[in-house]
Image (tube, rainbow, N blue to C red):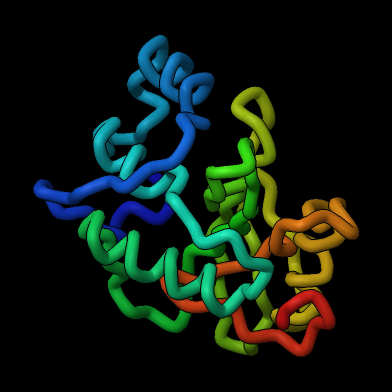
Length: 177
């Protein structure tokens, strides 16, 4: 959150309608090293990254609506800026027959240079350094992310999808439906 902190805010009275707790490992690491939050609070971290209850559907548009509504109820807002955007890769899971949830699988910051070149800053794991990759367009970036994360075919869950701030990332990629 630190790289994007000035462009994201979470209200103090946010409500979290979370599904299964998928943050326990992250929270343990953050309790051990609170400086890793870069000045943000654990509550802000939970608001952005906690899983959310979802419909049992494979329709991406319905899941995008769920994310938008849940983030709004959590008080998450994005300061509009065309040059810096938060990219969030969401996954759909059904841990039980009765439960369906969405959770954040990966995040990064998208920077747009004056010439239109895209730079994606990501941290793949706690122990890894940040890295920056260059892409010609959003389709190439989407293809990169989906090549890494769209690995479950034929299951009764939705494919991963990428949010750009609080909207579905606009690409010409066959992965975005």
